[in-house]
Length: 193
Image (cartoon, rainbow, N blue to C red; front, side):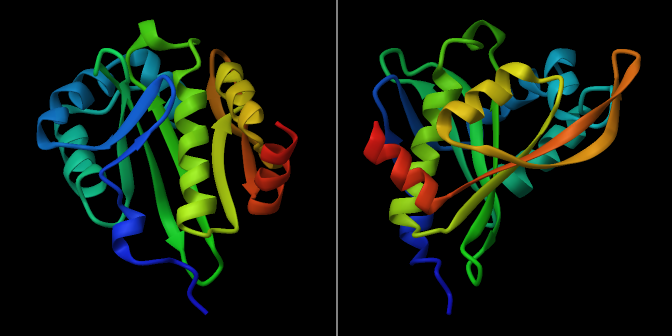
């Protein structure tokens, strides 16, 4: 049995929250991606490799994954100002098992730590569990990215495992943490809140 609904529900034009709005990416968002993914701080938090992506790598990533049809990639905008601050996506949608992987990057460092990423993740989870009727949303995060881990935990993600000492950063090895949230957990959490 395939759980995934029609393509229209899978790829909405926008998802509106209280402080952020998620919109389908446009081709002119490439400039922001080139800036974000050439930033060494972003590379430090998101890549196995120490170096930022090259311009050509960012272009390939943007056109194949962000603008492609196999990912649900959404631009994160501050609702009041329309400022583009990041991107989030579902990949590896498995309709037979009702699961997907979640990815998020707040690309503008001055927007870090203000709750925008948490709200964007909550909006994506609501989309996954209500519109898409998925069963499980998973992600991975490096253990040194404590701010991201706290944000994911606020959204209901729980640690389900670790790839031990999977990445070398800052002079030592760190675990890659695997987290997920199930539809039943998400529904129970929303009832409590």
